[in-house]
Image (tube, rainbow, N blue to C red):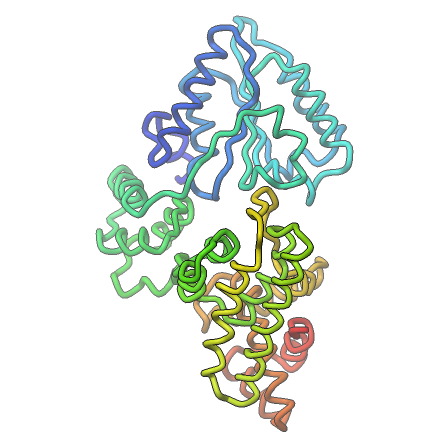
Length: 409
């Protein structure tokens, strides 16, 4: 039903990203006039209509559609075998084919080293329009495409737009979803229409008190906005406001800052000052923990917000993407570890009412700290194991795995 809903829309009815849609229509006009414009690079957060718009454009123009995602074209041979013919040929009556390559920023995770050269060769030979789709067009794995494509940005959808999309879908398919539920889903969606639709489908026929099933996708302030508020500011108040609006734990936020100082500051003196400032913030954080005297956090907050912001002497680098803290990311780097983390996270999810990814990135490190702190203070292992067994249905091996795998360094 979801695919039908998206694909049945005309491109003019795609909501919330009018400038992006206009750029796509101009691209189609150029193709129709016989030109061979640069491929488009549609980029932006998930659920904002990138794929839906590309499909709708093909439908409007009467183009055939060859759509592939990262799982469909993992190596050079597959790309050539699958795409070259579609890109270089026309139908019997001169019709065009739209080559749609989704998840292109997944290159570094799924593709072999020959994929980039194969795609470059494809661009040079293609007689048909090509559209790439990425969440992050600045990902290093697709840097070779930046000068070969025209960027088209899709932005997060606002709550009113999400509400309109859900209301239209509910009406179109007679879903019978209460308008208050639609409003609540929209407010929790964080600009992601696809996730909002999935949530609505879960709650078809449900009562208002069933909203706890989906939890909140929205956060007071997402981590990238918080980091921008710190690194891109030159005042005292803006960085402190960004930190105060974050719902990350203090130690997790410091790990994010620590990981990304080198991605924003380049001057050696700036780096030295920023890291020294962050170490002082960490000192007050640890002192507050040991003394159970949390007034120290006032100093910590000032240092890791305004202190970091005012450490720079030049305008920060804006081209590098923010990186997830390595010491957390690497904990579940292997397939086995990721599977274990996800398995345990599903157990925790029943009580924590949060997403699997957020439980792994934020809650598991906190739980690990709690377990380690309990053991260091003399708690009996049997009591700790019994608590996690009763509360989360975790066995002793799982408790130990979380304790060691997510131990903060």
